[in-house]
Length: 55
Image (cartoon, rainbow, N blue to C red; front, side, top):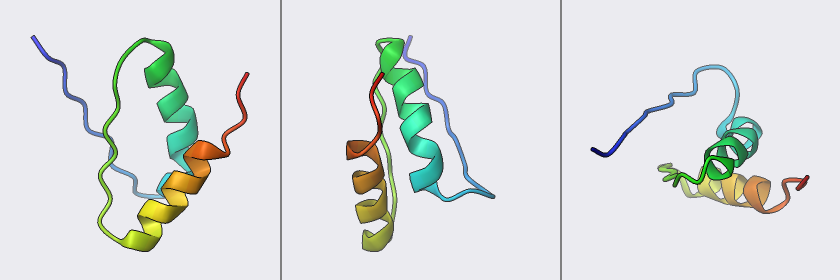
């Protein structure tokens, strides 16, 4: 059975939270889908994910 989790941000911007969240999800061998409405937010998320420091 597929597992679906939802994470709603209420305090911190997505581009600050998503890199760490994505790293955890991917480290567990799972997949991640990010959905964002505004183009500016998508661009900020994209930049944050690609510039995340890798360990």
